[in-house]
Image 1 (tube, rainbow, N blue to C red):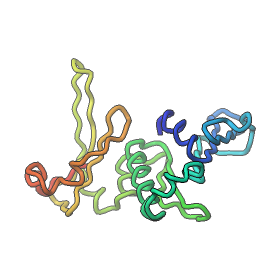
Image 2 (cartoon, rainbow, N blue to C red; image 1 turned 120 degrees about the vertical axis):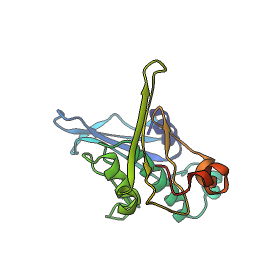
Image 3 (tube, rainbow, N blue to C red; image 1 turned 90 degrees about the vertical axis):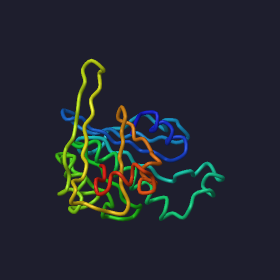
Length: 192
């Protein structure tokens, strides 16, 4: 999550951040409401890393809250976005769970590879059929890496994850890939 996204969400939800550095003696916790720090950060117990808790989404914007579809559908969208960021950010632990639940619906480990995270989010059937790709051009200051599925893997819906400068890009290609000439050309080659 980029800092601007964190600042934005603090305006429409109750946000609590708990963070501890590797060499810190304790963690620190800060809470935000309406985009403002409620009180100075306080020392607390905590694991190494940063935990961001978002509660009461759109508590202060009744019209936006009414525009939300059913809670299950909205939660599914949250899981999708966090799952994609967890794949892109191997080496960082992500977890998402519903309020009151003990088991996370998305959970990746801090020592997991990109393929491990793909396996966690999309399953073994996908992860075992991947081919790593990449290229770099120093003249253009361009570097690309990723995974595509091999010819053995075939599904009806293609999943295409694209990050540019560490930001997730939404693509209509993902939704319509089977209906376009490019989608037909790709055949069983489905991109990750």
